[in-house]
Image: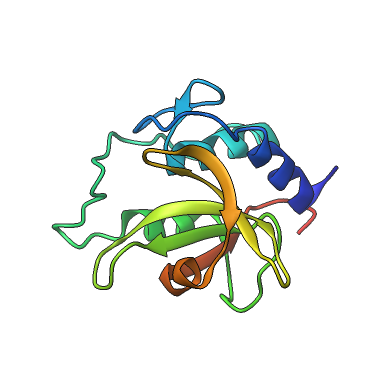
Length: 147
């Protein structure tokens, strides 16, 4: 298993992990960034930079696009209209707010799905429904040599 499918397989290995803010331990707890960090470690290796402590609002009061900036530093931007399994998805949970939720696309095509750590639910795979697609603000590929 290589490339995008390796990313999806690694992310699926986290399904059922409880939601724990700022954590990144498969089976023990993670948040949406922790899921991505864990998949990065499994598929690529060492994380590209230390993650400072962060609040659940992700600098929303200041309007800082912290996750978007990190994505632009470490991931490869893709057009929103070119979905593929293994893509990292960045969502804006409310109009006018900062982008502060991440997921990993697990299926594209007529029934798209993604894997994410969601407060109150833990890590799960769910349909990438129209309400989720409307919140999507960025799509990235992990820096895999196969891409």
